[in-house]
Length: 220
Image (cartoon, rainbow, N blue to C red; front, side, top):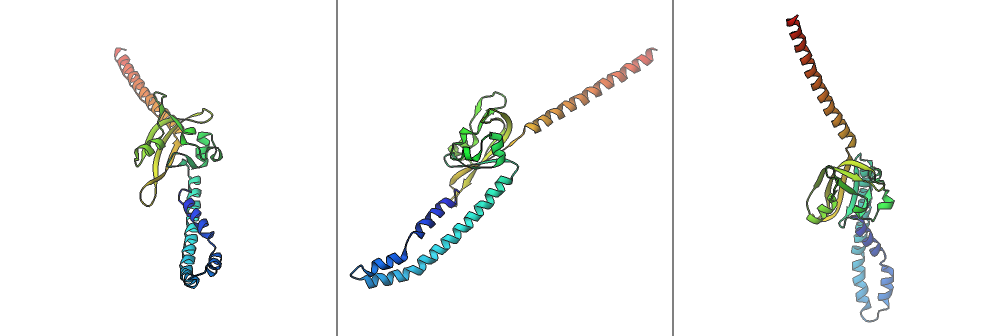
């Protein structure tokens, strides 16, 4: 939508030009109307060609945007797209689940309204990577480990990154925020570390028992 809306608006404006009405006006415009009519006749093919090209380009971009939207909605990661002001323009179903907010509710709202994160250690608020990217004009902002607080106060451990959406001149037009739930991974990592500790403890205990049995055998 960041790309197609300006083109759609221009297409609509051009389509509102009524060349037949212009011809009728020039025919009754008095002095030099014939010369003006000739100029219009020369201009009409170029204008029609430009309109046709604009309509084709618009259809192509709309189709391309639909493909992108379909791809984003099919991804396993949560995705939120904002404009240059940080206002939400799109999000996929994974983002809806993690934020407990639907696209209909979030669209047009600022990213801060649904994406609030805390430091994992201190529980203090962290600046949104979207806000940081927009403020500093950086290429990519990463948050390796944070707690996302959803709209219903559910807390989820996440990993996030914000990337700029650039136009043809490399100017930032919006931000793509990608994040995913790492709670289960953290649980698995904790369980794995605990398992390693238990294995180590068993090895130490087994070694001590073996040494004790050897000592006991010598004494007997």
